[in-house]
Length: 181
Picture (cartoon, rainbow, N blue to C red):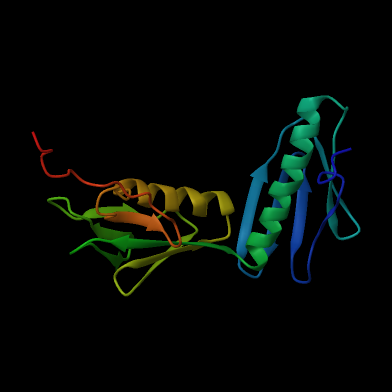
């Protein structure tokens, strides 16, 4: 048995789950999230916990077992605590402006770059350079953060661009003076 997969996912106070075939819907104080899982695995609601079972000990079933259990646990964490990622913008004149549709970035292009946030994602801007992405779906929060970072990734010479908070950018030395002949 998978050590992770065999553990049931407990549902905290105020969180409800519904299992309909291979679809699991979890509701909690922060919101609601639903996901469809692999058809070969069995999901059940037992004693206020979600249990995942696999049909055999094949390697792919073992891998899916642990993955499915972790995805369900992330759904429960999302509706109770939520997930967040933070980005920081570095560069002279680089900034982010909150907009009703999401965020607008000014990052050295000839035009501002609008980013439309998907449903269920809240983007807030602090001090024009710190962008915080929050939501109940861990996968979607990470995807939005990656898409924002991809607009202007940090460059290695001056370090300008959008990076995760705490990310270390490897810096390169620029051109040196012409070598003596």
